[in-house]
Amino acid sequence: MSTVELRERLADRAVAGPKQVAITGTFLGILAAWLALPPATVRTSTVPIVLGAIAIALGGYAALRDERRVGYGAVAAGIVGIPLGLLVQHSSVSHLDAAFAWGTLLAATLRYATPLTFAALGGMFSERSGVVNIGLEGMMLAGAFFGIWGADKSGSWIGGVAIAMLAGGVFGLVHAIFAIHLRADQIVGGTAINFLSLGLTGYLFIQVYGSNGTPSLSTGHWLTGESIPDVTISSGNNFFAQVFGQLNLMIWISFAVLVLSYLLMFRTSIGLRIRACGEHPRAADTVGIDVYKVRYVSVVVSGMLAAMGGAYLSVGFTHSFNENMTEGRGFIALAALIFGKWRPFGAFAAALLFGFSTALAYAIPPAYSDTASSVLRSSALFQALPYILTLIAVAGVIGRSIPPAADGRPYKRQ
Image (cartoon, rainbow, N blue to C red; front, side, top):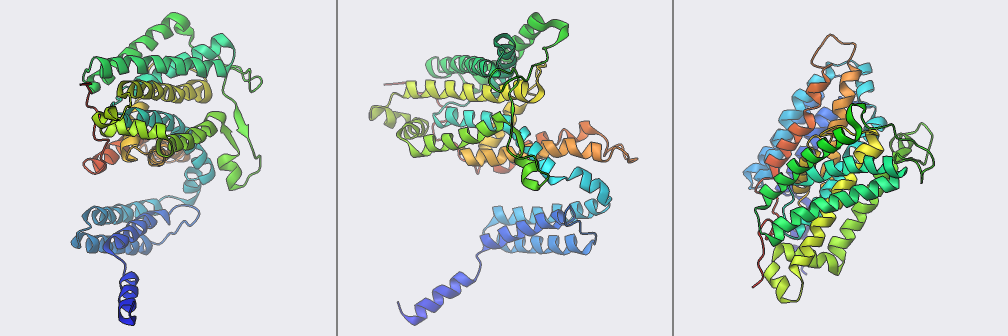
């Protein structure tokens, strides 16, 4: 390589491309609002205005050079960051410290993200094999009811989670029969699963527990207690202890399932078979892969994982069951799966985003309970935040997040 060529290459590397410029702009747009929050708590309006303006300029530069998606994202970050930063600065520091206690807030994020993680991973197995699973909501709800019923009858949370997984697997099998064997419309079939679960769990809840509601679950020994125990690894008051010091066992299990799902799907021949059935089932059938069997197993596993998320809600989190207690979390998990491009860690990151919005929605109203503003004290208003964020996230990835090629297409062996 000549000296001239080397200099040209170094010059090309020294100049940031439009995409890197847009990413920098997005970071600055986020920083415009972030610096007004604890612990920085910047109180001058110049900072968000300047940072937001730079973000808009960098985004415009990238958009004019054919990086429209990330460029417009940086512009949007700047446009949102400026007013948000200015708005936060009008709040008192004491209220901000109460609402944005980051250790507590991140621990709550993990708690709210866990059921979404289980359901999203379940949806990944189903859709990677080629079967759309709109029924995640119903499978989660079935897991929530049968989990607490199983814990109540068996006297152990382990029995409750096992029965919840069995129930989720049965609902997954029903969906698989209609989607694979009968080749019914998978969207309609998944919707039917949701309504079936809603009606069945509501009926059984009234018949079994009546107006008294579900009984209080005992803690007991970590193996024999009826509620899923917490795992205490630190009792200090530092940031790590606040976030990870005392988390429910199911949260740690979700971390393990996340890693195992990735390894299974992308590092083993089993995962290769699943993905082959979702991308090109006829070619998979040609090389000897039983497409029907792979899809059946994948959908059943999908139902079992979604039911684990429901069991965590009832047995590990609220320690009770109420009709329709999942409240759309199955659909949010499906949005997380799409947002994460049908990959485990991407779906987990999206679940954390939705979990953080839920945690924030519950943290803000109590922090501002002493203010005169009814808006800041309205918990119902802020609880809509995760659903609004879901709509924005899904709208933002439509046409950009590409599903498996055969997803939703029934396969008929020749």
